Length: 225
Ligand SMILES: N[C@@H](CCC(=O)N[C@@H](CS)C(=O)NCC(=O)O)C(=O)O
Image (cartoon, rainbow, N blue to C red; front, side, top):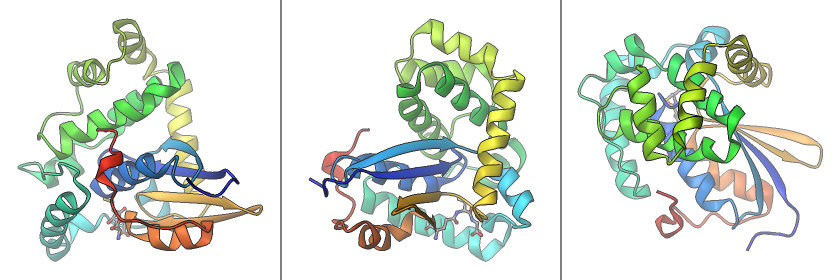
């Protein structure tokens, strides 16, 4: 069990980002252990790249080739079934995740406790089974797997194109940019009135140190998958 002081941790993520999936699984595994009040904050990585003047690492051929190997090793280590899609560039740079992230936020606005399973299902689709995450029927399939009621799944589909949801996605993206991020995952740890920003799944050891907790590795036995 973690220290008695509850720590507020915000995870800004996009389901197009495989490194965000790792951060998401680790944080949901450690939520109780580190006594965290974990806030899932879907954002739009395309907007982050543009707003921060950054470029996706996948656009650099050597980085893309490295990422492929890196993700294979990481998937095994964390026991997350990561498998690159057959055409990662098409998935990441042409198809993108704008509609998927609007759907996630739409679900979030209707039934907050489903944000976690619907996000996981989107990652399972795109970063494990090479399935579409751009079409309404894909969203409904993900919703069924995440055990959303038909009613919530369909209402989320109608609501995802409203200004409320579009603006919420923009606001989450802007909030992360204003805190100084340039990519995903972005993790904000609140401690003693200060906000500590971490980029990447690979800063958990450091986060644990700042929290006064212990990093005990991937802990697949606590998996929510
Ligand atoms: N070292 C980080 C890398 C994460 C990463 O490459 N994230 C991509 C999205 S999947 C990104 O936003 N990159 C921006 C950058 O590298 O500047 C980790 O292992 O988590």
